[in-house]
Image 1: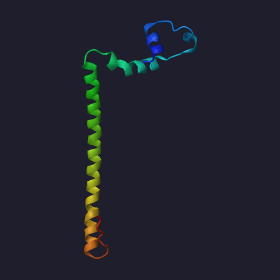
Image 2: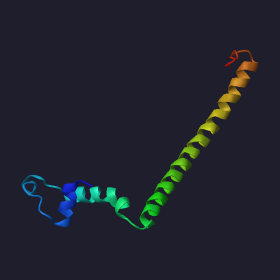
Image 3: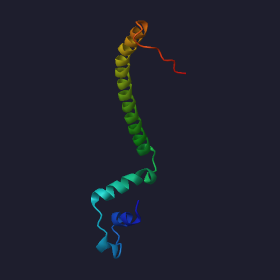
Image 4: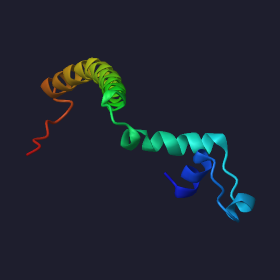
Length: 97
């Protein structure tokens, strides 16, 4: 956390900065939330955050899997068409090595 935000949260005077530094509650909250893991003694919060991250990763992987399945379904007819065109001599097979 920014030292000035710590002082602000503790209700301390920051001297001349009181007149010039205007932090919003949202900014204080965001700064605090970034430091929560370091400030927390129990593992509960860290595990909750990790659990949330794992769920988000799982959801992302499931979406990617669905997209891959859609692409595979679209690819099968194209490969069949390619094979047919090669058999009929319309398309020449290219050997990629």
